[in-house]
Image 1 (cartoon, one colour):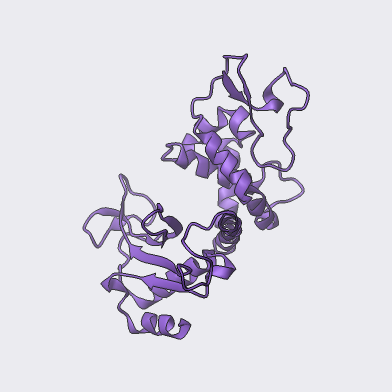
Image 2 (cartoon, helix red, strand yellow):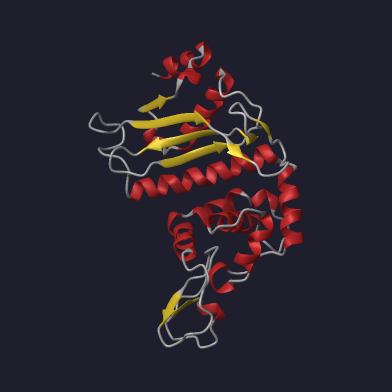
Length: 266
């Protein structure tokens, strides 16, 4: 038995769903065939999640300004393919080859030179691109929460409607001289990202809102960092959830300007 995509299957069956506006192929299970077995079949869950939550469509729309009439590979698809590479075990851009090798699951994947050119073009407008990607992620999260809110109670209610967001800086070790990798406040070489998570409570797994990459030597303290992290985290929440948010930090968040922001928001 194999999992295959109809558009790569020469033995198409009547009634088979074809790719329409999805970023990734629609898949089918064919118990009569044994060839072309996928090496990362867990990616099926990832591609289906992209489709169901609307992330693919939202990202394609948000990144429209970076497409031209000559564009062959959608920048949104390239960004998603790189995310798939990381999620399935890759640790560098070149590992996208494992995704490219499975077109029945991931569709057409751009070549390394094309990916390099697209990322270079996006990096030239990094703030706008980051904002666009963030908006697409927020739209997908709002759709998912609308289907199944991961917290007890109803949004905005007193019986569990509160959304708890945790802020914390951490360190990520770099094995080589990566860009902005430095000696961190924990005395290891790498980066010091600022993280924000939603606490799902006793019965959930938690949810990442943002991971803001920072140079390794960045301080874990500071009002500006916590204010920016809070604003980005709240922007990732569905609109109906933003009125009742509890922000939690460790002692690094004890800055007057940050506390004033939290106080003004109450």
